[in-house]
Length: 555
Image (cartoon, rainbow, N blue to C red; front, side, top):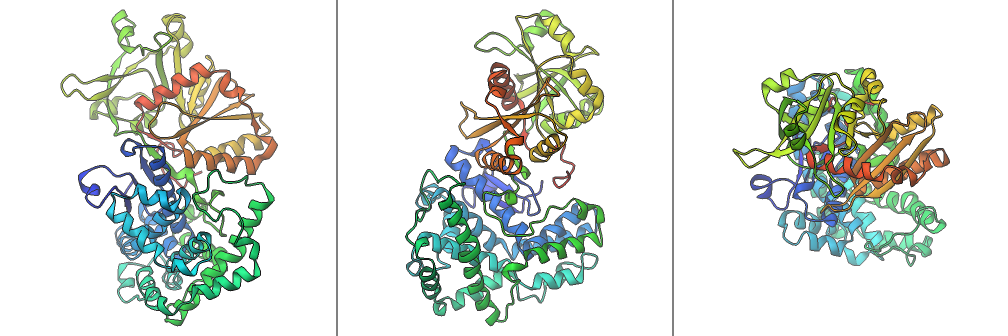
């Protein structure tokens, strides 16, 4: 995944050390867990990268540049559209980084955000610049100030020039179409700053406060308030309605009028649906199959809704571990090496997965990769390369024996933890083979919300339970699903705190009582789930919902 917006500890970090997060500018982002120090830093980076996508997917400039990248990735006019994408990213980088830094700071609390950024001069400056877009002393509360900052940056990314680019069409667009363009996010921020001295935010805020006095002195004016109130409460719904229907539109139009007067016209606040449909039509005219699978935001949605699309997030646990492939002999030495020691004695990790899923997680030598069977049936161990003292994965491939036969050969004293992936179950023969043993722990590497909706639409009895994962420096959450009609499989989704909490809320809102929340899903197989999760976290490279990385936009 190419990196267009990179989040690092400081400017030198992008060169000297690993990134904390990265967004590709089109629809996917990565969080590098091994580089994060604690759960609070993880929350900040998860929000930061998600906000890059939210801004890109909901504004004119962002959508045109994202679609240029998507089309190039599909092989359509790859060279000119990649060049166009790069130019559009560069002219919007300041707006993007200010938006992502500021909004994620609003979520964790601005005071705490400044502490987290204390040693990061680059992103501290983005936060400073964003806050300075609206004079703090003109805002009655921090909530008004935050809404105004958000509006400025949204307007900056919504030039009417994006519609001109769509009129040219992706069949002809290239970077030269920006040579004379004055209405870019970069130029719009400059023009806004030039008008700031005469732009009276306090007059707008006074007008809004007079019409809605209860929203000025109401709760939640402190952005760092914890815990936040129940989202189903009347008070919270009143606050949300005020922000979405009154405060944000008024702030947006205030900035829009200023830039229109400077000769930099803006896509109006209420035109999100028209914009999304125009973008989709422009893509459909050159690549109908891409347009058919696009999920474009057609209305402004609150952060807690699914507009952020956290199913696009990838959690990178580590670099791909090098993998060695050999045959399982069943000898005592082989069994001793492949056993994982635990509190309750030795266990074995058996994977029944597609070769594509394996290549996504581990780095195979060229000859091994070419010779991999599909699907792979193997016992897996994480060992140490004696020559380099680095970690590696050993796959001891099995014969035609199924997991039941392997478990019988190991005996009851060495339980076999059977792991597959959701994408691997596309192989119906493999899925049938796995039904011979129970439980089978299935790592969900396909869009979770999409498949839960499919299960429920089929009338299946779907049960879910959630838990935080202990013993990790960062904050990971686990969702477990069972389907009564397929009792052999326990589906596991592991993600970051932000992504999983939003997924839970999305599922709860979409399905209500049709999705049974049942702690027994975790309790019934607690020991096995703990073993499966521990082994996945020890050996895997990345956790996501993108299958074998064919395309993040595919259903």
